[in-house]
Image 1 (cartoon, rainbow, N blue to C red):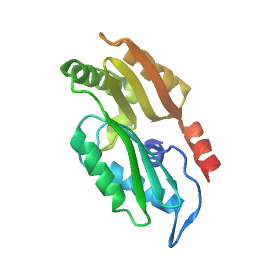
Image 2 (cartoon, rainbow, N blue to C red):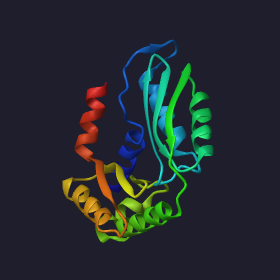
Image 3 (tube, rainbow, N blue to C red):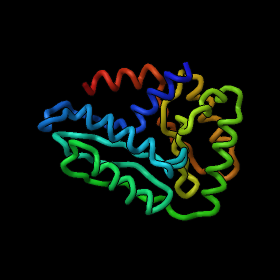
Length: 184
């Protein structure tokens, strides 16, 4: 089951809406999958970053948040080198530098991934629950197995000292599958 979650996470870390259209030699789905792999394999991409992508006729639009400016630039370059990408429109924002936000990120990640309900989620090199913190406002992104895990992750994040708000964008395994089927 863990392998299913990690494989779905790899596909959905970048889900934003992909239209199927011919880009010459490659279809947008193929381009999207390659973009997803490229971002997931980027060594500086962590659970504190979130990048979404959409592809239409080889034009890629990137959205999301990263913790450092060099990450945005590196991801844009990596995506631009993917076969079938004709243009990259980047709307990735860089989160403000904040020691308090950094501490909050680590506290939330430690609390979530040390909870027995989430031990299996932390096994891979890029865990599926991403924690985005912007001025003490937390957004949870990614894919979990079920509604209970989504609820528990939100509760854990909400209970951390200094959290102003929590937006829970976690999708269940079934929701992620449905979104993929609707996109294609």
